[in-house]
Length: 193
Length: 193
View 1 (cartoon, rainbow over the protein chains, first blue to last red):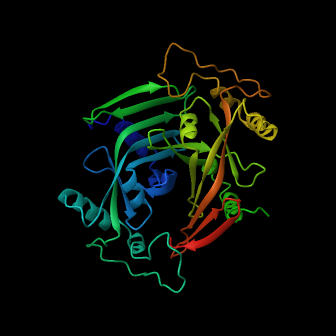
View 2: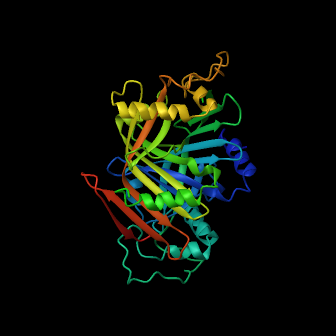
């Protein structure tokens, strides 16, 4: 059983909503270097061996890199319409790319690259995201090598430090907050919804 | 036709996805007073007469009030699975409550209060959200007066200053960015997805 008190609830919600095709899509909030919030949809790629680490893929050329360098805070939110539950996971973001020395993280990055669809892998060879579109410049359509992540491909990790779980299917609603201390030990309490 | 260049695209997406029950649910990102991001699901209540202002309801006792007071930046994100489109709307948040002097805003707040379901109106009479749950304290179940907003009820307005529209249904994808200048005039450009 994981030390994360909130994992059983989130795992159960992911299981109960497994027929929802949007299940793997979550929204990620970050803070821009100028202090304003940013938000976008990301694909949840599961947990790493460390049970409080959520995995995503991202393009190292996107605005997220500068945002994370200036402020590593990140927060994702799931809303499950069928079970009327919301999970908010707040923590610290880090990027794993070709320059990362840790062998386990390098392997996790290579594994995620291999799991992606050819269509998704190809997007990492497109011109830099967010730059002005040059209609004369071609967008490659040949998938890159599945065995070799391209330089722009990053594994993005959210290491959870706080979780807020809201259940709306009863009245009154129920809400729990979980928090990790500096040693990574979790505690939880029920709060007003 | 509104001066907001992005409104026709968003209005069309909302129309095309009108059979999706989750359509009105968007995620809102803010920045906490300690500089970390926050995110939660909110119900989109439509546009105000000012065509760049998005309306939401919120409880004035929630953490959002202190967040907005410290940093009025806000960003919402829609992802429409059926049309494979994402809209990110960034701007400034403001709250309208019983102390707001502007008559038009007071009326907009009263109108939104009257539109809510009895079930939603009742939640504004519950104990303060986010505080430790006291199991001995009852949660009122009688709906408050539809003609008189309770003190905790706020109209929350997001005044858009930037919009990012991503279309994933073609390959390569398409992405547009729109920005308002200090006079509220919008410009747009296509960027790499």
